[in-house]
Image (cartoon, rainbow, N blue to C red):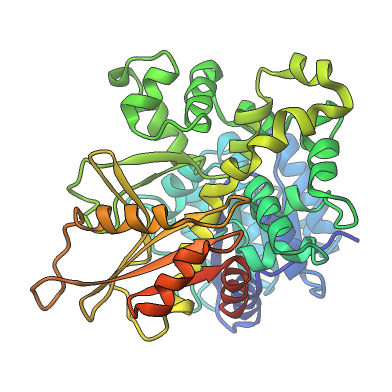
Length: 469
């Protein structure tokens, strides 16, 4: 039986919609492989009046025939209904059924009038219905076009109480680590930094194997279940894949500014707007800004690949098959393991930011913790607070204890941060150091003598993340 982890909030919202006495419309969307189908199937496991239909890219007639067959297995009387989408859906929903149209964008491709037909049903035919219609979609742009955006046929029809608009994101660190519960904190950070929080990528893992063994058999092995996963997903979503691949590979090598990314991909920055916009629409990349600036006006923007497994694939696998064949069984130890701490350091920084509100409960943060950078200077963790305190921190995921030089550099960079507290004046700065492998004696002595410096070990970060789950 497939393991189903977390999604408690989403399940509760769906079950509340199913149990409502009124007609309800829900839309579940998110990038491919994120777990939309698993969520709806799990939510329907004890429901006898549920029709589940997974759309495919086929002809309109075949699509309708397959839906009719799915519906007849639940309601044999539907075979006497005129075989048209509007009449079939009306019959089921007026009978208080739950109807799930999985991969709704495929249906719209074959039947463009379907969103308008559903709109007509919602507005005029289902007022007294207790049925629930659930639409799911991996084509995020199309879901917005037909359901969520102003001017969309179904705009404003999605249930508000509880919120029927469910955007699935990756699992949190704590939830994802339920797939490898026997791992210790270091192994879990490495695992999350490589496989992320996508259930489909976590299910093949086994915590009675080492991280390296899991990486080797699922990703590095040409027959592994995840070896071609990013390429498969991108081929399904994109045309002109070569340019997209070049941009993603450039990001995976560490380029973050738009010009740097374009240059690393061998492209002119002015020619990349379409590609960046498309990758953002598909939720494959994200843009970030210094936490102390207004993101709507600043030009200090960076980009990164959202999914850790995609970052890993473009960093270590894409275009390098020959190297792995040459190294054979030693491929992981030779080509991946030496670079892995640096590769997952960005994930460790994010986990430290996520843990910060729990580690400092007495502060109310004006924005969620982020990073800060300016003119070649950078701080891993920055969090302005309502009381005028500015929390600034550095994170080191190295095998060596964090040294005093890190603290000295942080204090120097802190002088460059420009942030005015809500009440005006200058902020009070507090420093936080996060380390995988502990702290040098000089750092520990400094923390013992000062009240503006906190040291946080790896176990403390993990404990904080678990307490917020």
